[in-house]
Length: 153
Image (cartoon, rainbow, N blue to C red; front, side, top):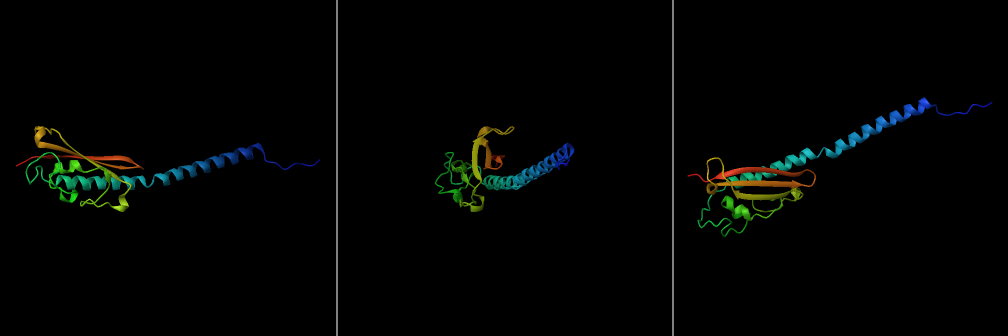
């Protein structure tokens, strides 16, 4: 009688266990590689938000030209903004430099600036502005930085 060559049950189980371990390791590595860019994107979004917030906070509380109406008074664009309230008219859009020129390498980041009157501690609402800078990227969602600018002598 001839003996047939075949796998035993133990050999099949060991093979399945080895394949399962290898595929789990491979899938874990694939997920790690896919998410490895997220911290870089998040850091870039934070840096963009910090740059916008710093630019806005360095502006005057009141319009140096007088005649404050709450928005820009005759400023042609972002390069001409001279007080915090001028940024209320800044349209949401891709990241741009301080002159309003889009930065091609940062086109995936969308920036929104919101300026609202908001009380801060004992500072009256009329003398305090809250500045919110939101930076959005499809891979990470939204990053928001906020600051307060007050009227001081």
